[in-house]
Length: 135
Image (cartoon, rainbow, N blue to C red; front, side):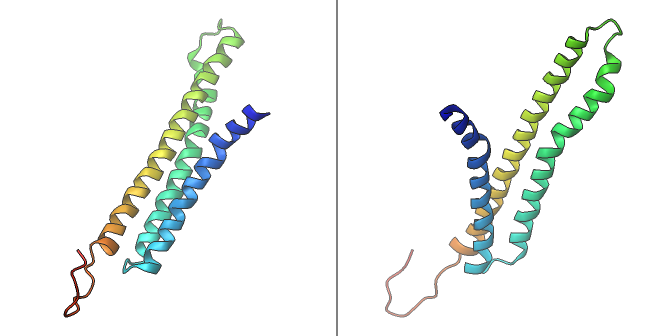
């Protein structure tokens, strides 16, 4: 039971929380800074595209192996070997899909980091006479 819980935590809950934090960051930015709303739209489009690629990659590889993988095997190949090749291809596809998903979240976070720097950290506060410097 504990091993299954930690596997569920590592596979589903932690990545969902990270994506949720990136979405909250994207929503926070235009509300509290001078950033345009296109920053949020761009971040959302990047996350949706990454999700589509993440889930479509294993499906596409599975379809490719089912339709074209069997044709490349000689007719004398044992069925167990064919399914072993299919499962190896599916494992690779899921791994590559996960890499695409992580890469997309990292790119979105970098985009939001740039936008935060551009519209929040780089903006100088107004100069007030007889006030100490802020930076």
